[in-house]
Each structure stands twice: as structure tokens, then as C-alpha cells.
Image (cartoon, rainbow, N blue to C red; front, side, top):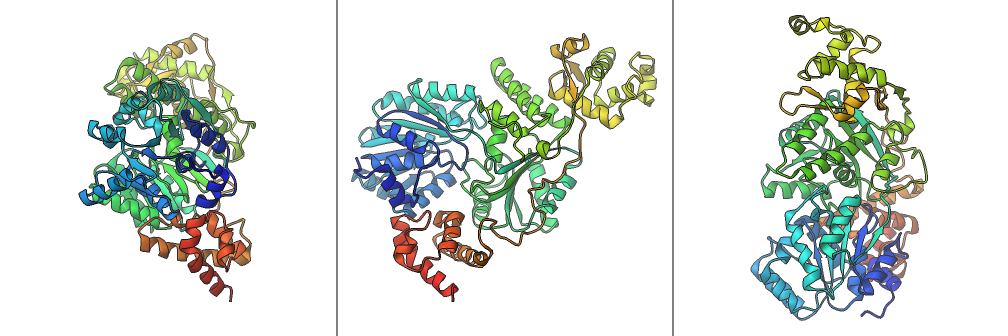
Length: 605
């Protein structure tokens, strides 16, 4: 066991003066030999919770991670901090593999990153049996849960670890897991012998906006026009075709954009990912195949052109924005077709009824978020079991542009009655035409103008009735047939029709750009940085980019933006002064002090 205190290792290796949140409690629990499940929001410092105890404990820490790119980035960051770390994956050559095993066998390697598929082979486990392993760390642990947002069947094999190695502590980490997912993780990975740490899900720096879909191409370009230039962002699309289409639209409009989806070759995806990690103004247009574990701190926006599958998926995806704590935005489009499509995906899954029921429950929760009458953040946090101290966050579209709801039980009954009287065989457009009294050829041919519900809803316009239909669907009173799009009444819908239920209508309001989001490039590059230090900060970013390119690593692995801001303020020009900069540990001080202090001195002249 390393005799240094946790605080000493934190400062010496990572350059931080203090722990954040529950990091220290988690670390102490692991060092005592106990198991831990840590549910922490993106950017809260999950990696430190296993890296620091791994450094303090004797032996090897084996880290299970789902993506090669994620493993490689964490390994490079550890190496630059002076920590002996390697990864074994499908890209590892024979000579490289032998060298890694030499380091493992002679005890000089502290961290080994592997995929679950690689670790859980009998050959690999037989070798692990002979090693001095001090800790297993399972990153992105929600992948083990069939109820989660990114189920990976290979993760289920990890349930064997605590039985095969009962005396080795295990830490499982995730940024998103509701109560059911947490229970499944605890049961599978730990047989419920685990201490769970929930550090909250709130990401107050991310503005939350939902806009009703009304021409996604036009809405995407308007959103981009309202953004400042030279920033990274992610645009999520449901299909490969739409991904390519959105990329083309952005490029034609002068934006630096690249696609990422499963239909591309592995080399093309890897190339585009590397560009995204290094270029300051790249927009990645992607399916959900992109993003898990992307450790890039300065993603300024996440734009969904379609409704995600669940609150977990949504939270996971928007969590890629604003990891540095700076202002970012999550903007989602959704409409009637999204609801119908998501229900169809769930019903077409090759799974049992229980799993499908759970899928519909999750979708209903996301729809409740999308149709929330008040603060979106409160709705989202309460879903995950958080109880925020505030009723309004002040950083979502509903807080900044409040929308009143009105009692609409009668309107809901009229609409459902029209569905019932037409045999539950028609879609939204036809039912809306009936209740508004619009005579069409179809209505005339079917004599639907003779129905009692024909023209009973003239108090609302056609567009308003479409909104009512969407909200009835979002709240589970009606569903859309997955094959033909005809509307069906649920048990809850029949209850509403009989007068047993509540339904409130929230009129759509056009999206207004948040007062906190800037539509022009601010004169201040970093708001908290004095204006006289802005120029030095930009020059330090350029130097960092050059160093990162020479080492073929993302720029943030060299130093975070927060470290560069501290350099611009402190202006260290000596070796000792450089050691006092935020995020500068002993090894980074040795590696970079001369280059950065000389650069700073030159630029102060």
C-alpha cells in the first residue's frame, strides 16, 4: 500500500488541491476492500474514483471499458501524468502484447484497460488468476442492464468476477441509471454486496430545450445560426440516411461537419472521431453509435433531430455536452411521428412482455419530460430519484418562457369519441378534420359528416387539435397503430372518455432562444478570465494544440482548459511556479514546465 495520503497522491499525480463531491468517501471505501457502485453525472470525476485508489493499492487495477477509443484516451492521459498504464484490445499487435505482459508480470504496470469480451475469456481469466490484482473497475456499468440505455450482452459475463475473485474489490461506475437499472447492476455484478453512492444527476450548466418538430432541416439551421462560431457540437439522428443528409445540409451552409454511423467503415469512423477530438469547430452528426465515453470537455451543444428511446438514453447523450462546466445547450425536436416510431421499435423487439412493458414505461417518462408543463430539469431529475431544492432551474425553455396549461378533459373526450365512432381505424389528420368540421372527399365518402362528433371542436384550430392529439398520445390516452398509423384508445383513454381522469392541454409556443445563450461571438473568450489575459489564453491553446498533435492525443489530455485559464491568470515563469497551476502534477511539471514557462515569458514582453 502506498504510504502517501490520498490528498498527497491527488496533488502529486493529478495536480488537484481537493476532492470533489463524494470522491474521497468512495476512494476510502475501495481502499478498505469494499465494493462500490458510483452513479455520478458526466464530468463529476468518476475516473479518479478508481485511478487514485489503484495508485495507492499494491498490485494491478484492471479497468473494463466498452470502447477502444475511450480506453486509449484514458491510458494516454495516465501516461502523460506519469502513471504506468496500457490497454489490450483488438488493435494490440503481438510484439506490443508481449511487452505489456512483461510489464504486468514484473509488477511495473499499474493499470490495464480491457474490453469485457477480452477479459472474460477463459484464457485471460486463467492468466488473471496468477496476477496480483488489487481492484476491478467496471466503467459504463449501465451496459450490463437490459433496462438501460446501452445494453451490451458481453457485460453480463462480468457477473462472474465477484464469484471468481471474492477478495478483490470491484467498483462499477455509470453516469446514468434509474432505480431499476441500479438494482440490476447491484444484483448482477455484486450479488447485492455493495455500497451505492448517488452523487446527483444535476448538470445545471446545460440549458434544456424541447421544440416541436416542424421541418427539422430548417430548425437545425436556425439553431446553428443562433450559435456562436468555432465550437464543437453533436447532432444526433435516428437513421444513417438522416445522418448523411444532416451532414450535407450543414456542410452546404458552411459548417465543419462529419458523419458517424454504423454503416461506415471502422477506419472512417475512427478518422472522423479523431478529428472531432482535436478540431475546435467540428460538428459530429451521428447515430447513437457515437458518443459513449467520449471524454471531450468542450462540447458546447447536443442537438437531437429525433426523440431518443428513454430518459436514460437522453441523459447519457446530452451529458456529452459541457463536461468542462461551461454553458452548453441540449436541444431536442420531437413530434407525433417520433412517438409512433418509438412505440413501434419497442413492440417489434425480440423480447418478453415484461421488457416491452418496461420500454413503454421509459418512453412514457421521456414523453412526460417533453410535454412537461413546468421546469424540465425538475421533471428529469425527479425521474432519476433526485429531489432538487428548487422548483424552477432558470435554465430551460419552460423556465425562461413559461407556458400555461388549461383543463382540456372535454377536448380530450371529443377527440377520443371521434376515434371510437370511426372504429379506431383512422389517423390523426382524419380525426382532426372530423372534430373541426372540415369536409373532405374521404369524410363525404364515409358519411363521417353525419357523426355526432363532426364539427364539435371548432373552438380549436387544426394545428391546435394536432397538438392536443400529440399530448393525448404522449400521456398514454391514445396510441398509434405501428403498421397503418390508425389511432387506438387505451384503457386510460376509455377512462377519460367516461369522465374518470384528468387531461391538461399546453398550447405550443414557438421556441425562443435562451437569454443566456449568445448568438454572437462574445468579446470575452472565457467570461471569468480578465480581458487582459484573453490573448495569452488563446496563445496557450494554440501551443497545447501543437503539443497534442506531436503526441497524437486529444488536446485536453495535455492540459484542460481550466489549467490554461489558471496559467493565463498566474503567468508562471519558473519551474516551481508552474507546479502551482491547477491540474499540474509532478510528471506534467517535469514534462511541460520549461516549454510553457518560456512561452509565457516570451508572450509577456
